[in-house]
Length: 414
Image 1 (cartoon, rainbow, N blue to C red):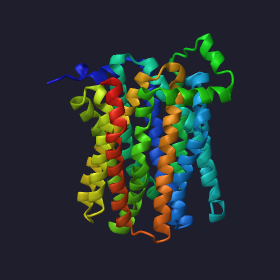
Image 2: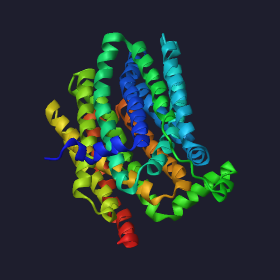
Image 3: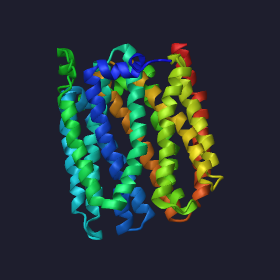
């Protein structure tokens, strides 16, 4: 039996202080994010009761992230990523604490405005963080670092949603917002103590002098480099339909299971558990990186099939099992695409590559969620019918991926 000291994940955290501090920062800020999300939902439902407005907050989050992403990638490549992460976490903390001023329906707009501000800071933080990981880990540590980050995200997602729901019910939304805001402040302490190399030669700095040129150079590089743009499309490709399916879990809990926040917490727990298990299984059974792009298409097909089952049942436990299995596939997709980008994109372009990837992802999620919200708000589709249609769409997307993107990857890398 393997001892704790021999576990490669334990050794990574123990021996690599810089990764450990960035990882701790991620855990603290992620816990605050998921701890507070149900409080935001609760406030919107309390003051409006509208499915459209509930879906709109998700759209606002994603579109704000998307709109700022092109500038964010340039900023992440141009400036010191460590200082950027510190500034962004302070900004996100301020935005969350501003939710405390929402005391009546007429001030509900503030939630949407400051959520947009919060996500603009997140748009810079995420590519800065993802681009930094290869600079503080060895090639042997990189995959483990991403699996560990995804595993902790999944655990925190699961526990944070549950604890956040309980805290919102027990202490109210104000207490949850304060804890969320303070979590961001604590995150900056860990980042401040980390050493993250800022490697820029004279030629790179000169190419980044003009922001517009720097942004366009990033997109040109991505478009011309098939080995990079293919994994960069994976998250967005899956989210075209997965975004709407995940959003509908909120409505399934309320309208099908009749369990409200309790049912949502359980379904989201199953989602989080699946995203935790998926990358671990992927690393164990899919070691050939040349096949990972094809695996992304297979993950879309598998995830869609399991969500199709969600649309055919009214049993909580069956739903939880299907959601868990679906997100095993989506978790494998997420980590494999991230690792390939970190390995294939040079440091000078890495921030812009990740910001472009996040742009595709957030636009896809926003449009998917908005489409579902409108279809349900105006009674064009019933909830379970919408689940079946979006699940079938995800399966079809995966098949198209296998027939096109995966074939191009095979032709390039064998």
